[in-house]
Image 1: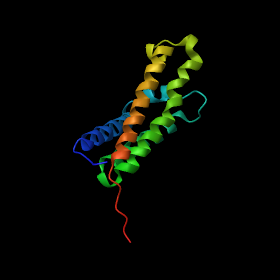
Image 2: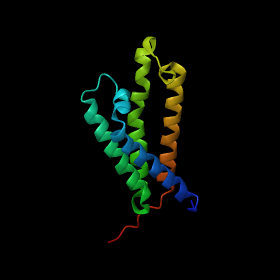
Image 3: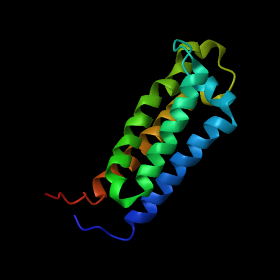
Image 4: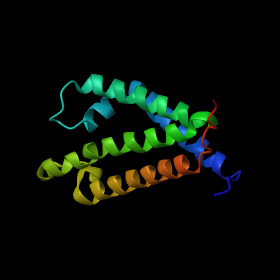
Length: 133
């Protein structure tokens, strides 16, 4: 499949999304702690680790030489975050926020599946590094 100039903006936008998301794990950690499922321990540590992982994935996506790896890493990370978006369904009888009600959860999951598809598309379209040796 030929690579086009359209591929770079999609990759750069994905890289920016991941880096900004990762940074906000540190600037607004309370929001992210609230997303961590209640059955997971060490919420603050998980928020910090996932923030660093988001930044790392974004940096990998930004560099053409590591874009394929970064795209797949981004898809994997966002997939691992899906349980956090499903968690409100366990507590739906006490859901206060619209995004924690079933329709809101469905919207959150669909948006995140869109991010996974975007990351996978960036990874698939990235030029593989030539093998040497």
